[in-house]
Image (cartoon, rainbow, N blue to C red):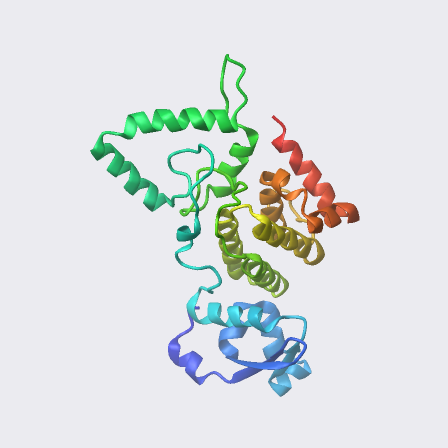
Length: 290
């Protein structure tokens, strides 16, 4: 935040009692009130919370509020490992030469390949594999699949991105990402509720990166299904069709990996319950039709 340091130091402390157990978390009132018009009214308004310097927000988890406090001081919050690329496993099928590499790693590998003189041959070989895996061949022409086009769109704003969408890789030793995915979603809901757009946008960026990291085994699949269930229960449809929010990001990813997710029990329960999120998902699935 851009408050002078001495203002933060001399600001009165406001106490938040967070979660069902009422865990006390203390933050400078000036820092909090500047971040959110809703919290500003809570701290400086005429309600009893302002008079007592204490507010209870039992429906916000302690971990979520701690991330909010971290963001207030640093402009960031940490839930995603810094070096996630080490978890990315080699593919069990032919994929493009840059699959599994960040933008920086891809440039480094390309440079090495050019020095070794293997660049042209490698690109031709991998592009052939790419067409065989992603596109339908009619012995006449080749085209990129709609799935790959949607993946390119999903990753277009990210520096650390994979060339190909997540896939089933039963040999990969990949961590359970459920808590990580949900932490982004819960903080995004908090930011939306208290009108903190800068934090909400950061949550969406971090969630997108975490989703790009996913290798589609059973555990990450369950995490994605639980993320969709949380979004359906806690985040309303978009007010504007072209706006981006938690719901749009989660649904965009769900459409890309739909066939990998469809057998998950939690996902089947979501489909069985119906509701507006299922209707929106079905409409978006039309974009996958080639």
